[in-house]
Length: 323
Image 1 (cartoon, rainbow, N blue to C red):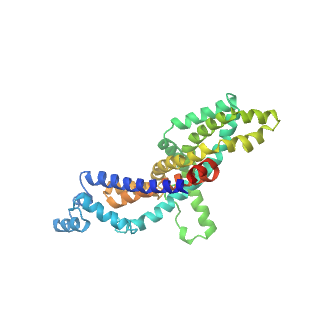
Image 2 (cartoon, rainbow, N blue to C red):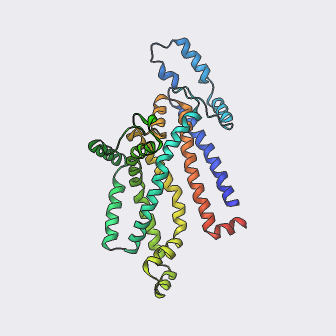
Image 3 (spheres, rainbow, N blue to C red):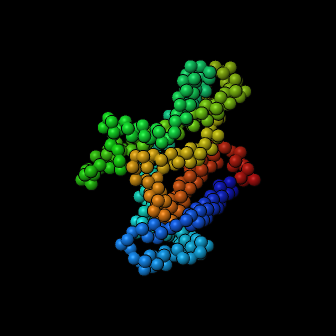
């Protein structure tokens, strides 16, 4: 278990480093939350002074970070200036909403990419492979923002799918099957956009790994024994090419989180993306740091899961860890 323990320790140090960097960069930027609300003529100078003292803006960066870190170790990530609620309560619903998009999108993207990548490798340099390559290239050169705007235009033009928020008016009065259907209809377009944003990368990696594995001596021996092509590809070649693809899982989650931030903003999905943008504009320091850390934690969780799968599938890693 030394392998997994080392990965866990690396993840903890990464979170600490990200928190220091985010706090330092945000704190050194000109202005703060009190400076932003100073433009409101209804707020007196005395109130501004009291707010600066209450929020600790007059303390040094090191003191403020030390106070925040001490509270964060006890599960308190600070207080939102703009929303007037604890950051943990604010992030809870937003993280759940983001996972409601990213988890199904990850599953669907891999379910689509695996057969396409395997077939493309098996049909190397044929018309099927060239068609997949053309589609991949087209999606790769298309910005995620353009894909999101195109699907948003399609939804608004046709009216087949609702856009904006994640529920319709009257959601609270619906029965639970209707609630599930309503959320699914709202999530359909964002999930489709996320799948299209990550599928080309997965297909290219799967195809490259499969092409390399197909050139192995055991594949030629299996063909000589008359093993059918379909069984050879999915029962023998694909498991042999699995390790690099498991490592790709963490990278795919990172790409998906980045695309989700843009998609949520365009589609008005109440996830981490809109919250992070609003908090940056409002100079809401602790919400920004909390959102960045949660995004990093989700990425670390994906990488840790891929490490667990590698540990379970590759006996060489288990032997090295035991040694």
